[in-house]
Length: 171
Image (cartoon, rainbow, N blue to C red):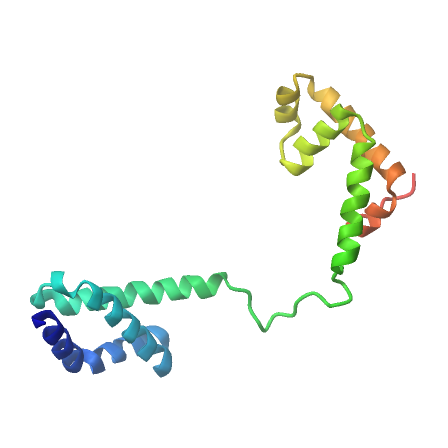
């Protein structure tokens, strides 16, 4: 109970300076109050371990780290003011499923080695040299198998070139 009373006294005494510091960190009064509350909630969980002489430094440290964490989180979020892709540009779920089925059927019609080369090169993003080592063949074999497999896919499913945004130049 003594910890609770000490914490309550600390909050009453230090609330205004903490919010003022948080306002300098956030630039917004409402965000500052939220940040100060969050810092105090975190401090309350461990208040029994906090030395009263360093309590202010402890809470301010939480305040600073939570401010940085929030800034990092916001930085990773997409900007809502940036325009997204047009609805007309988005493929609907049915056409995406059709494309996957078409691709799956076309891949089944390739030889096992051609499928393995395409899987390693494009799905697992391996280099030609890595693919050659994994398949136990030369780099030139990987190159020719890739060329033959892609050519065969173009024959089996020419609509996929348009679906995935790659228009092939006429040969």
